[in-house]
Image 1: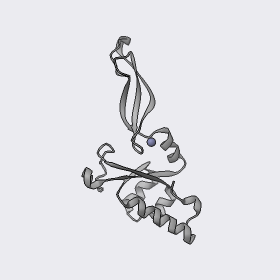
Image 2 (image 1 turned 135 degrees about the vertical axis):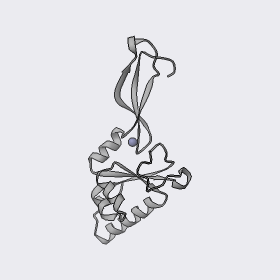
Image 3 (image 1 turned 60 degrees about the horizontal axis):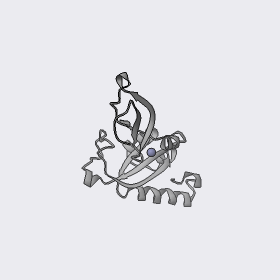
Image 4 (image 1 turned 90 degrees about the vertical axis):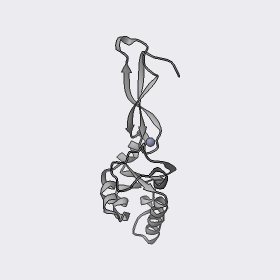
Length: 146
Ligand SMILES: [Zn+2]
């Protein structure tokens, strides 16, 4: 919808899936004059679907192309808007991430983070390691990534 409106719905962009979702905010123009766009993006957040997975104990691993975006994986300030996503992502239980991640900073982050951006190849390695651990019995089938 184009044009100006008396109110605008607030949206945010999900850090996990990069989709825009309504965040429940309603912006009213001063004097209820039609001056606003149909929606206003208030920044980043986590969409309801991915918040639910976080609440169930999962952390999202989103694959990005670090070489094309110039993101330095040591830069904790890298914004989700700077990353170039490949479209691949998985969700791993935080308890499993704490067992399989070898990088101390990533292990610490997985305890509370909702999303971790990883370079190309990391998701394949994680899935292979977790599936191998399930096959040998050190992890259960319930620990499989989704
Ligand atoms: Zn999402």
